Amino acid sequence: MLEKRFHFLVTLLTLISVVAVCPSLSARAPVPGLTDSVLKMRETRSKMSDKVGIERSYEFGTEISFALRMGEIARLVPGENPFGLTEIFLGPMDGNFHVYHFGKRGHITSGYAPMKLNSAYSASGSGWTSIASWEMKHDQFLVKYRAEKKEKKAKEPAIERPPTSTILTESERIFGLVTVYRMAKQHFAYFDQVSNLDWDQAFMDFLPQVEAEKDLYEYYRILQRFAALLQDGHTQVYLPPSIRKNLDRLPLSLDFIENQWVVIMRHPTQEILEKDIPPGSILESIEGLPPGEYFEKSFFPYISAGNLERKHTVLNWEANFPKDTKIQMKFRYPDGSRHSRMLPANRKTIEWTQDLREKFIEPIHRAPYFSFKRLPGDILYVRYGRCDSSSPWAFAELIVDSRSQWPRALILDLRGNGGGNTPTEVAQCLISKPIKNFQFRSRWSISYIDAQMRRASQSAQLSEKLFAERKSWYGLDEKYTSAWFSPGFANREIQPEGIHYDGPLVILVDGYTGSAAEDLVVLLRGNDRGTVIGEKTSGSTGQPLFFDLPGGGSCRICTVNVRFPDGREFVGPGIQPDIPVERTIKGIAAGKDEILDAALKFLQRDVGRKKSAEKTKK
Image (cartoon, rainbow, N blue to C red; front, side, top):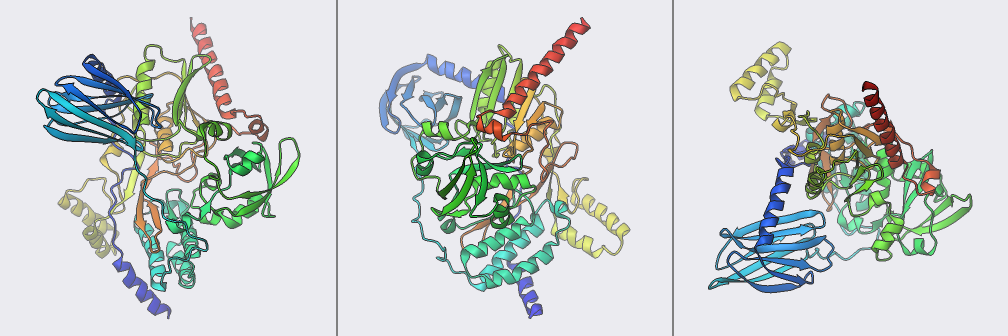
């Protein structure tokens, strides 16, 4: 029976199509001269302002019509909108029809289309769309313009648990496990960090489980446990949408502080509004069990992470409970009183308003995700909460604006930033000389050369000689090996922006700082730029390879191995701050930001020491 099953699996493995991966580390190539682009965009705006022939205010989402003469520009001021749009410049110039959108953070989007008698231009922002159409009559352009929210896809109707709407055959269940196994076998970049894991044996151990499990939800839980063996935050199995719709989270967020599970944040639900749970409250039990025991039994085996702290943070944003299921929880409030609560797993029982967000959600976990302010002592505090496409531009604009009066110090707050696109441009704005890029490599193979290596494997000397011959014959780079490949950009130095800040720099991090945000920390700290203060980071970055699984779910496998410029590892263990700060239960209950306070004290001491040293020299 085992022999037949083995032959079946070998046949199945050959049917899996291998997806080629182009390593990109969730990143774009850095935009050359971003601060120069900011200056040019401002110059363009100034020129357009000089040619404004029409100014109109209008309600966002409605259509506005007007006529323009050749060379004239219209300036439109939209009403209240959720995207920060403050003005739009549009009109025919230089043979093209131009549209520029500006917001509270400066330039948002822009573009142009060739000018025709009858034509249209469309642009998309984050969650909104703008469309300008025009018709040329004599020497005038009759223009119609509309900016509106993008239409979201209609939600599928919810289904009741247990989620058995899709029944998989035994062969389909086996195929799903084989797909995860084989994709990881070929593409996973961190097998060296799980050296005690026998991936082949793990596959054989899990095979009987997927053969026997017919419930779709439980089948996917098996796949999640299988992927979690790789202990990587960018490698995981996603439940099918039909299942995810029936799951939710508790209306509070917990952190493991001073060896206790502590409430750090509540989410505004009807239950919380009726009877709040103060921050700093200690969770003493959940469903009759100590919290650590409950989480270790019910959730941690299904979370793929390189360290325990990463699993703690995942608990707060991954839906783990059947929606609306009431969970028995016992708390000890900061005043010492004990309370038993039945909290439903549902974070959306009421509509969230901005006032509710400000009252219940920590600043580092709510919009706006990019903001800045001058703190006492002429310290520029920058909150960089998401690595989205617009934040590097906003940061570059801030640097350009600050050059007239550079701050005494800059605090870059990356807490709560789970990543996105690696913001290399931000690093360029904070350096005054070229720096080394992080080390970056991906699994790589050329089938024919691998076959030749296998033939020559009996003699190591012959294999090395043959390999050198093949590299020369096929024109491969000298650094090429049959196992790994480093793209060209990983070997190039990162250049500073034309306008950059090179004063004292502090970087704030916590357990939620991960992926692209961690890349930024690696670039700066790995080149001795700045002081990192806070808690250990997530320890997870990379470019995942996504693929579908039977039953509607999916999986991602991390395909790149990233390290500090000097080769030190951080994926898995996380980045240890230069100055660790351990939050306290008392501080959370009092609403203190102990990490920011520590940064301000450090800057006060550091700058004071430098001034004292300067006086001594004189």
